[in-house]
Image 1: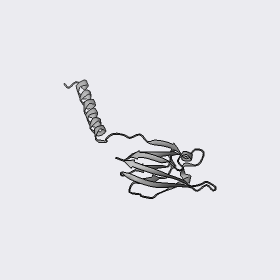
Image 2: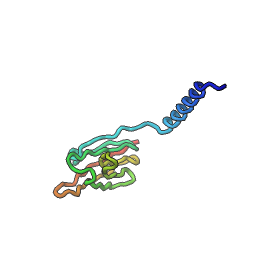
Image 3: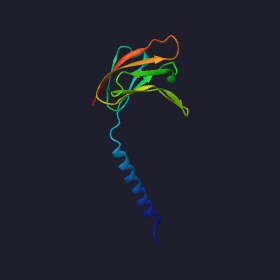
Image 4: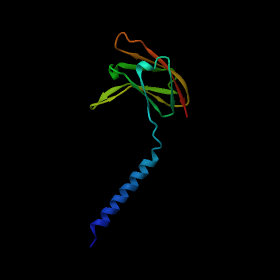
Length: 122
């Protein structure tokens, strides 16, 4: 007769080994840089490849901002959105080493464009 405990213990060990293998293959996690949209005008934001600038829009809707990146090979803009009860701020992700200008515009009238530089390093 096979005891249930050893079988259950083997199942737990197999699950842990599988989870450990998944965790080790993902690489290090880089924390995002969080800045208010109002503080970005004329500034330079330093990012690493793969790191994200999370733009806090304050009282304005997260989906009201659009972004234009001068060199899309260096960084990319991601629009903000609300999805499934969660709010995602707009952001800029560093793609490769270099420097590029980013211009944020807002569809809400009367708001000045925000222009800043993103420097991406390895």
